[in-house]
Length: 219
Image 1 (cartoon, rainbow, N blue to C red):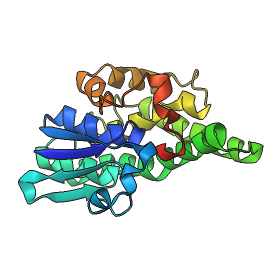
Image 2: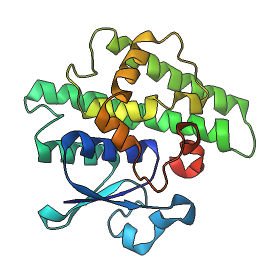
Image 3: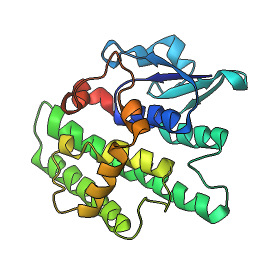
Image 4: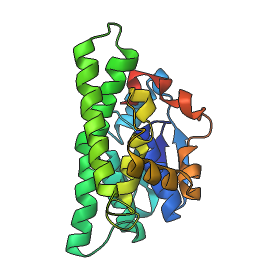
């Protein structure tokens, strides 16, 4: 059994969607980011960085894993799915996973901060992060012109990138001309496991257009 500590954010959705896709049993522990649950001692013992998501694998001597990308890899390897075992296939998935972790997530997160939450609107910062976020989505679109999913077959790379890419509107980015990206996002959004994982944690789930309003704490 996996204990999942999460909240309704793009990084949180990565873990719950992966658990649903892999069919692994899990128990949800919803953290209230507004109440700073993620900074309390009990949670910091699991993730010293004080961010969601985090998991504890009760079947592996209460092994704790934090950082959403590391969680995706751990769960995929545990279940033996969504991550190839051959060297090249695994590398392709890891490349696109790292692309999200190092690019899409941080840039869209900063776009959110300056576009939505900053008390002072700084045009330079807004334009800088929106442009870079848009460029990264264009990279995804270009890749998806040649393949159905980022690594060929559906994988944890798709889960990671989708969880951020499908919130493009919240960052103030336009994607009307990115047909391949839109095709991919729609296909993933229709998957039953994605629908189920996207609704976790149920007690804090809101309408899609309101979820990100948690504020700066979404990053």
